[in-house]
Length: 109
Length: 113
Image 1 (cartoon, helix red, strand yellow):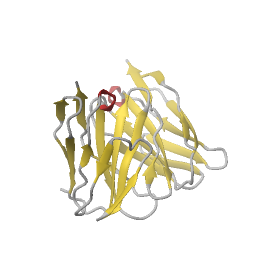
Image 2 (tube, helix red, strand yellow):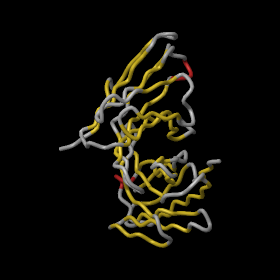
Image 3 (spheres, chains in turn brown, purple):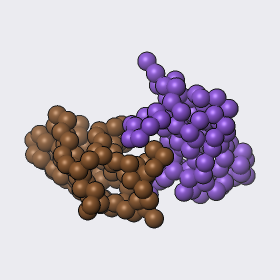
Image 4 (spheres, one colour):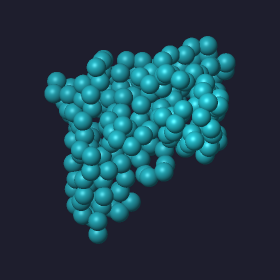
């Protein structure tokens, strides 16, 4: 079956670093995506991991451990505009994304 | 620029009516998906298609249908709208091949009264 767990909400301070964790169990695995979604908008792509390890992309990094069914998204130098929902989405075979409920991140000044 | 568009953006309909939500993409992607998003549930897959004349059921397909007569469009039909189908609907598309990024439309907010 499918099971994706991530924290419901997190709060962090502008300029800080925050790590959003995700554990997953899916039927088949073809990599893991992280999407950002601002309120009332469409999800937008942040990162993709298919092999174990860390992928870095500017202020955002994403880590994957396939054996542990675990990923995290790391956001550095937080900005107010980073306040959004962050969606962990393992990809099953057939390019089907399976989404967790998302983590609402609030950045405070 | 290539894009994916949904229409309408907002719709209010009555229980029992048939409703069709449009999704059109100009990426020339083979894969297209319909999701619904509800508070506490995240995005759940309704139907998906890997190409013309191909359609497949997702995890919450009851009460919904899709058809794929060309590459660009995947309309979603609610056969007989129910209040439980009040939700935000997102269409997405991606290229064939493993691990390709999905691009999402702006969403349709549907209210069934």
